Length: 270
Image 1 (cartoon, rainbow, N blue to C red):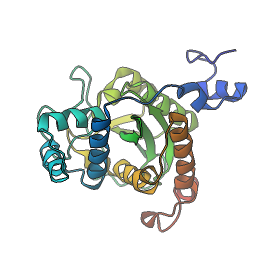
Image 2 (image 1 turned 180 degrees about the vertical axis):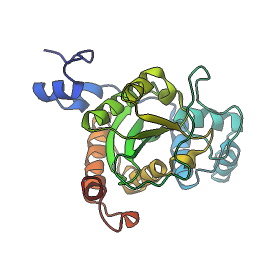
Image 3 (image 1 turned 90 degrees about the horizontal axis):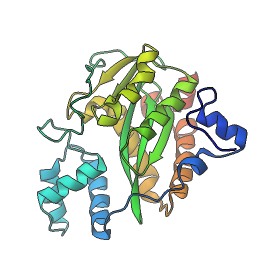
Image 4 (image 1 turned 60 degrees about the vertical axis):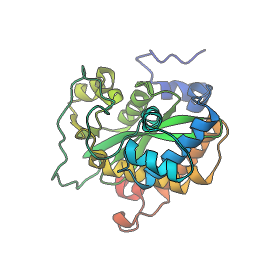
């Protein structure tokens, strides 16, 4: 018996449970996305510097790489940053990954008092370096509690893994508002339909305004400085298992100063 992702009566997660399969067995048999060894080194450097200085666009990043001894031109830096799905915080023309045919929704969170769990969820994608390639990580987080509701990995920037993460989250509960950036994964109709069908309000960051999604940006810094940069995951399965361990720690054990030194799980489920 095989898992059927088109089975409308039983979710993929439930099918895996019934068959005794780990979701990682189903989704992560593939290999990391590939690049040349030189480009992988540059991407690792870009990732670490961008995590520290998200306001660096391709121009500043190119100059920083030169200071590190890598004589790259701006065009190459732009291509690698685009491949990684990142751009500087400052708005600029021509760098958005948005599909212009997709509808963009207004940003609803400016000035909004966030005072309860499941009032606002947010999502984003980040780059995960590996010794022989790289993967992309998407996560959905609750703004009030900082609780990571769901997450997924992919070796491409297609919308499918973002939709899987959303479906997993919506199996648990629903938010009042769902916030994303204007990336083509999140403006696609396949991603938006589950939200609109449930009458969940859709909010989108202003173009180039990464800090509109500040809590996910803080999550990425925690994931990378506390886990990814300290460990080497040689296979996709190892990366998946490592992230699974970290997110359990992050939700249930990691104390947050902004939460009065409580855990996201304690605040979320109160």
